[in-house]
Amino acid sequence: MDPTSEPQLIDDDDDDTMATHSILITHSGKSHTFTLPTHSTLSDLRLQIQQTFSISPEYQKLTAPKLGLLKDDSLPITTLPQPPKKILLIGSSNAAIQDIKLANSPSASTLRKFGGTGPIKPAKPVHRRVDFTTSSNESKYTFGPIRVLTHLPNPQRSETYLRKLAADPGIKAVMIKHKFSVGMLSEMDPAEHTTHESRTLGLNRNAGEEILLRLRTDRYDGYRDYKTVRKTLCHELAHNVYGEHDRDFWELYKVILKGVEEADWRHGGRTLEGGGDGGRILWEGEERERLLVEEADGGGWIGGSFVLGGGGGQSGNAVDAEDRRSMAARAAEERAKKMKDSSSGTA
Image (cartoon, helix red, strand yellow):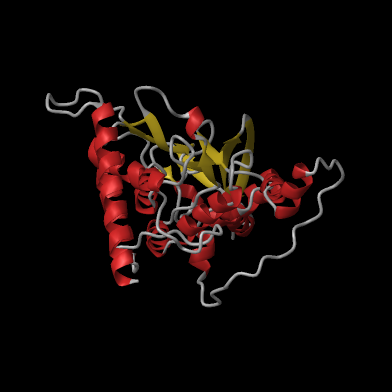
């Protein structure tokens, strides 16, 4: 009997149990190579990433060459490319997310208002209705912190607006269906994204790291129509998967929009909850803004953002911008007059 045969078998088994797979992760200019057993999955890799980069799995967005955005946590890591090929990690650290939450807390706003410089105490818990039947998917495929512009009037109403969008039944349904997660949902400053030729309605940074939405009217005299902003959000969610406005992008956008509209159980709603408004009818500025979007949308969707009036090349019968504003204003006045007459007649 060959005395070396048995040790040779043991060595082979030992090689099998020690088989590993290396993956190179890059984040914010830093790189780290992870080495895991070949039987590991994407979920195991996420836990290793959390220990190294301090980013919770639910806030991690991983993009691999050819594979694109990695969503299936049960994916074997052996299907992922090895060094020198890199996998891009996008996400905010737990400490950064906590800093943002603290900066947007009521106590922080009060401290800034009265010129305080001491430590900011945690805000008191806000009592909100909690759905205890919420599934784990709803907490995983959702939005991260809400960020509003505190230097503009009524930041509380902006926060209410964004939270309503994040909690919209249709938005929640499509995010779970498509496994979308967004690191941060933010309010866009109209002054920074408006020119004499166009205005940006939404922006998606780094495939879902942050989505910014234009909530306010150009003159800051009110807020834009809810369903119009929600439609913009649908567009930006499609950019979580596709950066370019190609055929695949538009097909996904149509699927998302259809899913949101089918799940919308408030048909014909024209009110905005919260913000101290008592659910009143939209401001005149909002109504005028809605008309401009419906009548003058040139379709200029560019570079991961929804830009109104940036399409160029309008047809010869396109209406002049000033005429559109005049028509929109007259239409709003006529509707307001009819509503006033109707209210007087039923009083």
